[in-house]
Image (cartoon, rainbow, N blue to C red; front, side, top):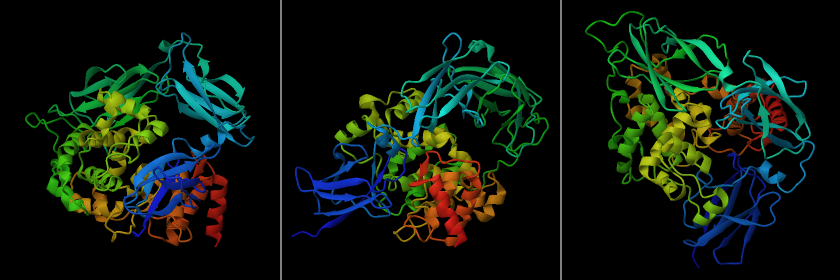
Length: 577
């Protein structure tokens, strides 16, 4: 009789949260014998099977009438509690609980709205406010389809306000959320789109906040929606600007030699917008450019870091722990994508490569390992692909729109090729989740980058592989390989502490859900894996969470299996002990 192998899987819902107490089972393909269990407190489902057998993993989410096959694997696939086989459900747990059921008085519901002008034109990226009746308003903007979703308790009185051309928000709709709705509620403005012409002045400043004043500075303005471009020439560092509220613009400042600086995005949110500072990624001293020296050279000497060169195969081989035979096919895509998406500083390159190395098993796994049937039934045919998995049809379409290519239908598999696996990850790096990870990399914010990519702190600074296969270890090796310590472009104050990552210096310190996660992952009492256990770090996270909870709420309403109320009880108990 062959020796059994242990298989460790981990269940996540659509939002990326792991799922506890989920009814699951395993069975050999074409077999009626089943192993029934529930996922544990960390969302893990651990079971045994004979080697080299095809095994089906099934799940029964809340309100489901029966079990559904969610993944088919070979039992000899390597897995562990540190590197479990990831299984993602197609809906959030809240969505499952609301299916075919009456939502309770305390349940959360979604009320979608769509905003149009007086003639029915969709108002994209348009400022609106919502609030519980009689309470404080929260401002947000609509999406590209003029839509916005309001999350509230069931049967809650909510109010919807919209911007006017006088820069005032007026009440447009008052209603009861009931049990929520799928069809958007139409909000029609009393004015035409043309009334929302915005005027402002853009002031150019460098990364230190000093005025960027260069004689005859050319600025290229791109209207993102139409692709139209216009070039302005200024000499005082200021550009008078007329645009439309909600219109997405992109400005590229050209150096005197004609080379472009990194593009900067801008969207007007008011008709009479206050003067705006446009921050450029360059250091400059106020003054005229010398006649025969058109290239700005101050603080731009590269020395021997990787700012001024391509990534090489030797770089990737030096970073890798496992086999390196497959790495050569990634060199050209990486360097091409770094140029396209301006991932051009050595520290940004180090961050990108180290994070994607960990996410893909050092570029071995370019797509989610599920069957075609599972992909069709659970992701609508669009499972996770690429170095930072691109999932769901809407995201494939958004990426395709950016690239001017079609990644739908039979073309979706292109994202599993090295070229698009890298490019889609670089697109996410700069465009995804409303965070430009390039900026966090420049601040050496490993905590923030890891939280945004992972959703928590799995594999942050601890692993079961000799301490070489975690996010911190990969990054520090990448720093050494790319000679980040020799860089003369990045903030020089970082160089003496490149290996020092503190919560108080991270963007996570201002994110209520993630800072609670920092406490959980470090808490010796809990089973979160991936961080070195430290009661002092756990308490630091819990204390900051309690402070932020006064003004911030969890989004979604549960983080890491905890409601905010329950998280506060836990944090206060840990702080008082």
